Length: 198
Image 1 (cartoon, rainbow, N blue to C red):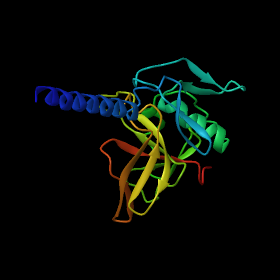
Image 2 (cartoon, rainbow, N blue to C red):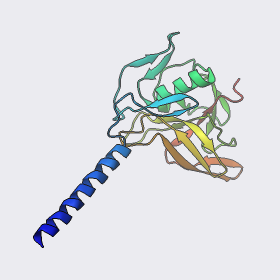
Image 3 (cartoon, rainbow, N blue to C red):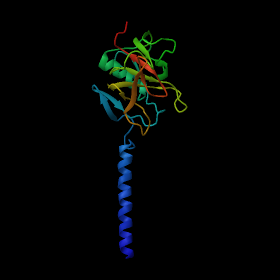
Image 4 (cartoon, helix red, strand yellow):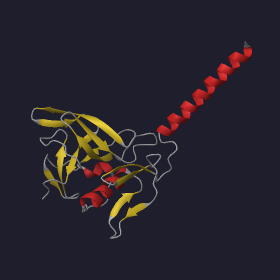
């Protein structure tokens, strides 16, 4: 009887161990910094480990600053550069600095050479828009990502550097009220769009 109990206990422990390893792998623990974890329009998203990790600056062949590897800013600027052939006049700044709080909804953001939309906005989010998140108690630099899907009630974003266990894709509720579209998020400042820029 005791042998049977020990066998069952061993089987349970092995199953717990295998399940734990699977969950750790699923949560990115086995990625190395710089590994590709996702892509959008053939532009890779790279794993960065801890959000504060920095692996040096990424410059293009023509010396345009894409940002610090593998931070969120580096991904969105690399995406805009490679997929949309877009350079920002001001190629520096933290994620939260992409959004100019002095501009009104639909005004031109000169530093980024993009149209800026507030949250909420009269303009519905579009695929390829940048979404800018403000600082939080856990991240004083803010965050920036790319809108990868849009429906009538939800958006999906693709992001780099969401944290050691974060995912490259996230979704947010999108509502329309009083003729304005609002992305439901405590920290979403607004969006920047290449469409209709001056």
